[in-house]
Length: 132
Image (cartoon, rainbow, N blue to C red; front, side, top):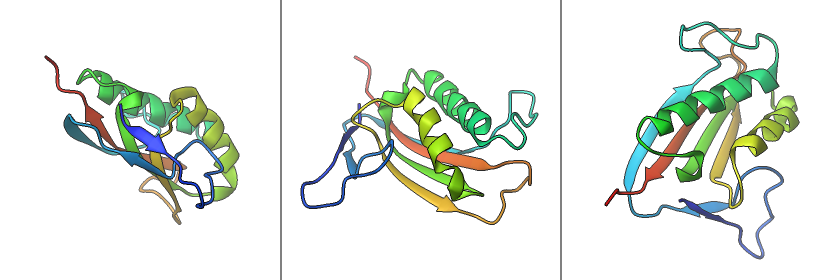
């Protein structure tokens, strides 16, 4: 499990993330940016940031499960959104998938993603423990 932490003397994060996270021993998995598409490639939750965020997080969870990983193995995520004004919705959904200590995180507002119906894209770095 990645070990997120906050530092005294540095502003404490306001949401579902830590200031930094140690990368434990294990296999490092770089997860490409995922958007709100189901397995058939259909966009889920057009116009709804919360629904799209949940679909993205479920996609990432499924990638991790395919290599015997969990959301607890994520050390860092990068979130690209078309509207940072929806950050409360994003963090509400993230709280369903992450527990403390949270992974490190960066959020960037972009003008548009590849498909204009997509509101959010998330990429992640996870460390999957080496099995015995």
